[in-house]
Amino acid sequence: MGHLRIEADRLTIEVNSQQRAEAIKRKIGRRLGKRAVFRHAVIESLEKILEERQANPPAVRPSSAQVDDQRMNSPEVQRAIKEMAERHWRDWLDSPLPVLKGQTPRQAAATEIGRERLEAVLMHFAQLDQGDEPFAPDLDALRGELGLS
Image (cartoon, rainbow, N blue to C red; front, side, top):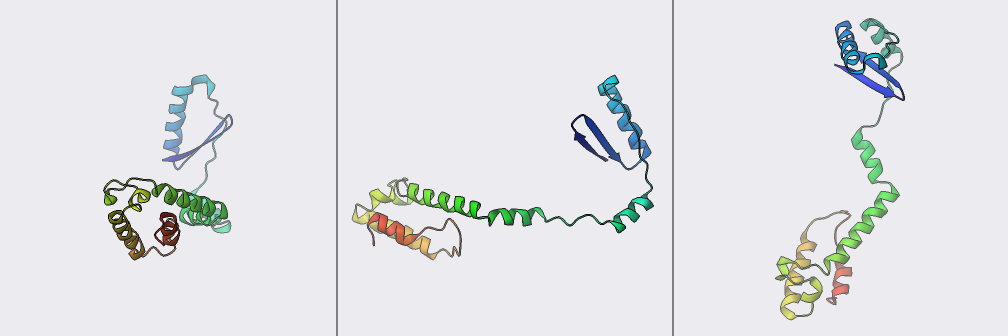
């Protein structure tokens, strides 16, 4: 167990035992030969490390979920999601749907039986509790586009 950090032409390895330090030095020596130059080792006692951590606790970092939430709530991401949703529903109008017997919503809107099927689909969408779901359809806009208002 250990941590490797590569920066430019430097490799820093942190391990928690002398045994591991010797093992990793041997492995690197076998693989890199003379191209690897050992500079120095720093050995710290557990007590010293704990004292330093208590004196200088690591900075509190936001969790990945918090970072994701911040990103999702950024205006740029919200705008992109809105544009994706609008594009989806625009494309939906011209997509053949099994529930409409293979017709697109636009094609279905042209016949009486198709309009009935289409209304059933739109009513189903209305019954779904979608809250502030960004991809929820704008039913009024869809009905207007299909001439069902």
